[in-house]
Amino acid sequence: MIEKIMWQLIKLRNIFSRVLNSRRPSVEWRPEIKSVQELKQWVSDNFEYKHDPLGGYLDNIKSVGYMCWEYRVHGKITGDCDDIATFVAWALSGMDAGIAGIWRVNIPRYGHVLCVWKGGDKYFYSSNRSFYAQEGFASIREIVDHYAERTGKKIGAKYYAEFEIDF
Image 1 (cartoon, one colour):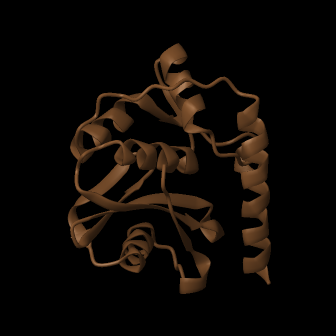
Image 2 (cartoon, one colour):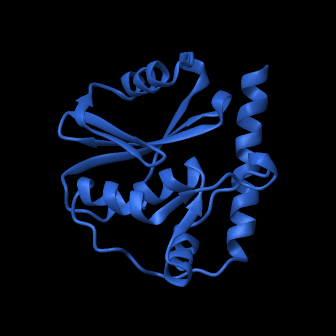
């Protein structure tokens, strides 16, 4: 029952985000990033983690266009895990780095979102401004297990969802 409520709240958040983003400024711009290592450094230098309003309860996902506008106007991007995951996925999609797929992985029980990508036969991920792109993982489930182990959280198979992204 709780899982169904969580997924319904995610759907409402997505609708709220679309409406909010339709009223925000937006620019078409892409930073000059050619590798995952450069992306990691760019995100570290230019993203400031900031919860959504009301302690994260008024959750919304910023559009890439708005985040680019934020960077061009303010010299940095502020956002939480879903904003960072969205931006990283978008930046990865513009690279010629042999990336075969990109996913946002929602873990609603803990209010967290990861960006996952596949290069060759391995999967890699970012969580906020941390990138796990060295060793590689065999599956998205293995990444969720790694995240759970790293953070001391228990994440069952029904408590996360992966959404493939195509920009």
